[in-house]
Amino acid sequence: MPKTVALERESKLEVFNRETLIKGKPAQVACVEIGGQTFTVTKGPLTVVQLQDEWYEDVRDPELVIDVLINSAEFKADIFTLWQRVPNVEPQHQYHTEWESIAALPVQSYDHWFNKQISSRLRSQLRKATKEGLNVREAAYDDEFVRGMTEIFNEAPVRQGRRFWHYGKDFETVKQQFSRYLFREEMIGAYYGGEMIGFIMLGNAGNYGITGQIISKLKYRDKVTNNALIGKAVEVCAKKNLAYLVYLYWTNDSLAEFKRRCGFQETKVPRYFVPLTRKGKLALKLGLHRGWRATLPDRIKRPLKKLRKSWHGFRAE
Image 1 (spheres, helix red, strand yellow):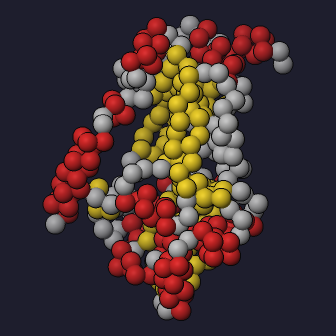
Image 2: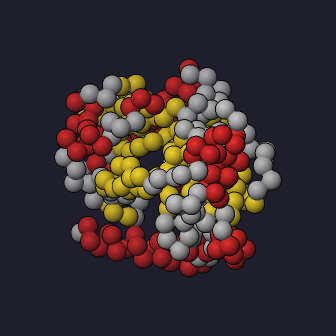
Image 3: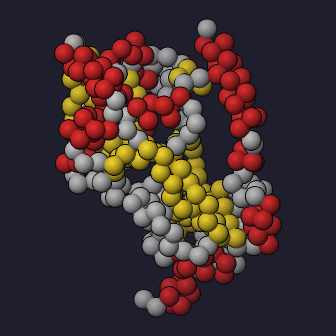
């Protein structure tokens, strides 16, 4: 179909709501559909549009999306943003470009990961955990698995210094909320003494595998359960010819150290910002297009994170 015809058909945009989870709770997110793809609409001082499943798919025709957004009479967006997914890290567009840091682990095989990509100390810990009975394997999303998930979620109200989103959920809630993306996810469970002590929901993003939920019981910290789960995820990715395992964003915190120990590397991918209105152009010029949190310097963010950790720790006592 010629682009002009497609533009004429799609320029009348209608905003609709789609159910999702935000911070572990059911919520409605505003969306528009363009070119057969769903884009989320984030409203605030700026109205920003981006592909809803950008970790899992690419924007097929950015120029069409931009044309439709600019020419829509019913709906006005200030900024359209998109990025490139690994392994395509060389910029392919002339839009305003900034670099996004993600955590990516190149995948060859489990043996390569175990012998070449992690430290000798972690290798020793994994060998010890295996000898002691830790068993990590692919699993089915059945009632037994969901019961294990629910028990892990309800072990502690605070994790990594913040209130844990899934604490307090019952079996039926967990089963329903985590079944939405089974068409593209595989379950991997970690078991010790007949008890499920951790799991990872591994997504298939076409170019790479991606960690969805990964969590394990705090009382079995000595079993390096999450590390073992990553190792199994590497094995599954190799079996499916996925060249990378991605663990979302690269951040400067304790989680970054865990990622580093597991062989993940900070990998920069281009993110583009396209201003669609005068307000969007001004925001981009002033550096306000990422929101106010992104404008805070690290010297302010760090003490705020420590304060949040102390507060949640106090409330959990």
